[in-house]
Image (cartoon, rainbow, N blue to C red; front, top):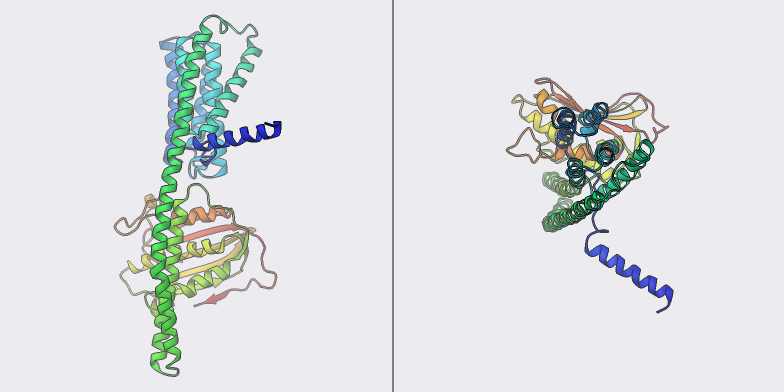
Length: 446
C-alpha cells in the first residue's frame, strides 16, 4: 500500500473509532448542568471545604506540608463563583471563563502542588485521585483532561523550582502511585465520555420528538391558513356588504392565530436546544418589530387592541434575529395583557405601552403595563427556566427564552416592578446604527 494511501486509511480508521465512542459527536459543555444554584453551591463547597481541610490537615491530622495562606486563596476563589456577576447566567462567556479558571487553579494545579509537596503520601495520593474524579464531574471531559494534564505539569515545574531535589517522589513508591493515578484517570475519562454521549443521545431524542410534534402541529395550522384564505375569497365575493367586513375580520383573526401558534412552536424548539442561540447578523429595526407585533397579535377583541399604545421616541437598528425578537415582544405583550386581565377593573387605553428610545448609546425597548405588579421575591427568579408566577397554566419558558435571545444579541433584559404598581420590562441593546432620517420627536401610535 502506498504511503499516502496508508495514512489516509489510518485517518479514516481514527475518525471512525472516534465517532463510534463519541469523541467528535458531542458538543463541548464547559459547565456541566449549568444553573445559578449549582454554581453557588460549588462556590460554597469550595470556600468551606478548603477552610475545613486546612484545619484537618494543619491542626488535627497534621500532614508534612500545609499552607494556610494558600488555602485562603483557594477558598476565596469559591467566593468568586458565588458572586451574582458569575452565577447569574452560567451560559455567559465571562461565567464560563471564570468557572474554568477557578476549577483549573483549585483542582489540578493546587492538588498537584500539594501532592508533590507531601511527597505523594497516602493522604495526598487519595486526594489527587479524588481531584481527577471531581474534575470530570464538573466540566466537559475534554476540558477536564486538558486541565488535569496541564495543571499537573505546571505544578511539577513550580515544585522543581522550589525543591530541585524533588523530595522522595522518585523512590520505589512512585510507580505504585502512578498505577493508582492512571487507573483513576482512565476510569474518570471513560465515565466522562460515556456521560457526554448519553447527554447527547438524550438531547437528540428530545429534539427529534419535538420535531415530530412540530410537524404534526404545523399540518393542521396550514389547513387553518387555507381556511382563512377561503374566508377572504368569500369576503371579496360579497363586496360592499356587512358580511364582507365580518368575514374579512374572521380571516385576519385566523391568520393571526396561525402565526402565533407557529411562533410558539419555534419558541419551544429554540428552548430545547442547549447553550446559547446561534449568532445572527441581521440589522433589525426596533420600531418595525414592535409595530408588526402590535399589528398582528391575536387580540381577544378589538377593544383589547385599543389598550395598547406604541411610543417611538427614537428608532434604532440592532444586530440579531428579527424572527426571534418578534417572539420576544409577543411574549412580553402576552404576559402584560394577562396581567391586566387579572386586575378585575375594566381596561383603559394606554395601560399597555411599548416605548422605543435611544439612551446612552444603547437602544431601549420598554414594555410597561399597569397590572398588579410582581413581588420582589418573584422578580429575582422570573427569568429562570420553568419558573412561573402562574404554575397552573404556564410552563415558565417564555421569559427564559426572551433572556436568551436578548443576551444572544449582546443585550440585557430586566424588570422594574412594585406590587400594585404594574411592571416594566426593559430591553437594552447595542446599537448597529440609528436611522439618520428620523428626528427625536415623540411619535405615538394607538
